[in-house]
Image 1: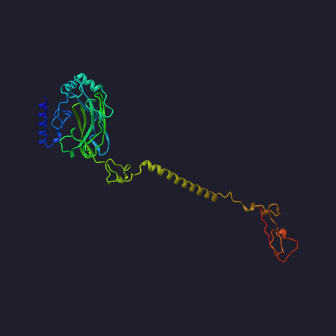
Image 2: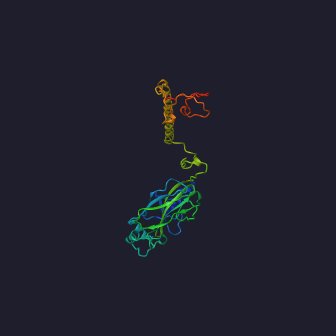
Image 3: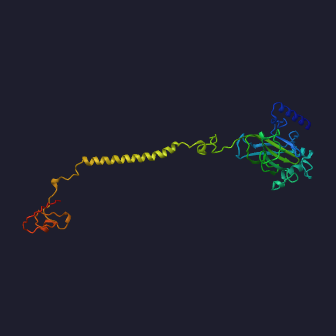
Length: 329
C-alpha cells in the first residue's frame, strides 16, 4: 500500500511540473483535504496512510480576508476502531501501556492532557499538538505548506498550540494573516508518532488604510472622510434643519401681517377718535389736583411769574395783562 501511494505522489509531482503548477500536488490523489506524515523528518514526498483518522473543516477560512484582520477557523478530528487497531499495529503510540486497540481508545478518549500545552507529549496526551499554520505562497520556496515548515514569526506564522482528547469535537483557533496574495492554511495535529494536516486557501487583500488618499471599497465617507470626502446630508437631516427654520420664518411673516392688519384697522376705524365738541369745558378752579386745575382768565401787573391767575389776581387792573387760557377736561 505504501509503495502504491509513493508512486502516486511521484506521478502527481510530475504532472504538476508539466503544468507548471507544483502547488497543486498537495494530496496523494485520494480527494481528501487532509494528509498524514511521520512525526520525524516529514517532507512533501513521504506522506503516509492516515489509518482511518479523519479531519474536516467546521468553519473554513474565508475565501478573501483583509490583511491584519483576525478571523476564526474550526475543525474536527475523529477516529474509529479501525484507526486504533492500525495505530497499534504500526506503533504510532509511544506509551508503553498501549498494547491493543482498547488501550489505545482509552488513552485517546479518557486520559486528560496537561493544562499547559507545552507539557503535553505522546506519553501523556493523545492529540499533543494542534494549531494553524499559514504560508503565503508568494514567499515560499517549498511546493506545499507542510507541517515541517518552521515558524519564523514574519512570513510563516503559527497560532498558539493546544492539546486535547480525541473526543473533543471542536478545535477553534484565531488567525491573522499579514502578507497579501494567496495563502495556504493548514490545521495541524500530532497523534503519537504521526501528524496530520488539513488544508485550505485564502486570498489576503491589502489592509484598508484611512488617509492614503484612496477611497477603497471598504471605506465610506462616514468612516473615512479623509479619503472619501464629507458625507452629503441625508433627507432626514435636511428635514430636521429646514423644518424649524421654515416654521420660524412663517412666524415672523404672520407676526408682521398681524401688526400691519391692526395698524390699518386703527386708521380705518375712527371710533376711537374723541370729538372736540364733546370735550367739557371746566370754568372753575380745582385745587385738589394741580395738574388738572383750570383757572379763569385774569390780568396781572406783576413782573414775577404767576402759577395761576388766582394767585396773581388782586382785583385791580394793571398796565401789563397776561392772558390765561382755560383748560378743559
